[in-house]
Image (cartoon, rainbow, N blue to C red; front, side, top):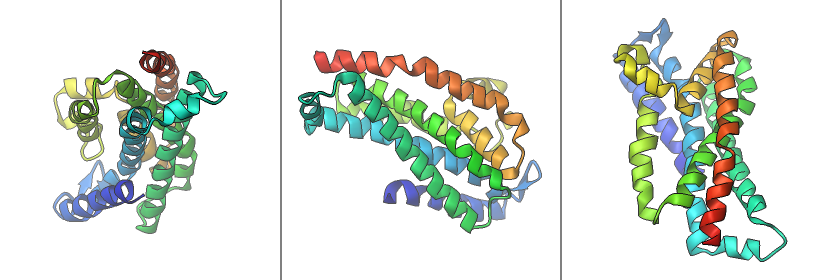
Length: 227
């Protein structure tokens, strides 16, 4: 729990209280309340992605856990489904933890945020699908450095968590639209403020992305394990 719990809290304290002393408001919202819902989304993302990259790869390659499981009546599809659901559940778990922390800080204005928990699960499933795809295709564990540096970090920085994307060139917001974190940030921020009517496009996007990505982890992991 420690890594995924402490890091968002550090961001909250360092940026929310530290930088927030200089940046008073964004879009009429105190800066710390602006970034707080986005930390729910990022915590969920990192928990699911880390579990289904390093965790999955280690279980598959070094610990030989997959070999032991596949020696039972469990088949490859069952195994991959378990990895995806566990990654999504872990992402949801950490998202809920951050919700509790933010509520303790008095940074949540609406109980509607609880309604976002199923959507955190769906987005966690998306991150798990992407991570399992990476685990099935990387040549070695060191290659996850590229995944983290070129995909996860830019998504974390440019999904509207710390500043509105309309302050940047329009191409940035257009690219961000195709990332799941951008939509989960919008949903978390809207639900935390009690404004849930504007989130339908984001919800549709998340559900559609989860369904579109679903076949690929199964196909690629089956190819990797059989090979």
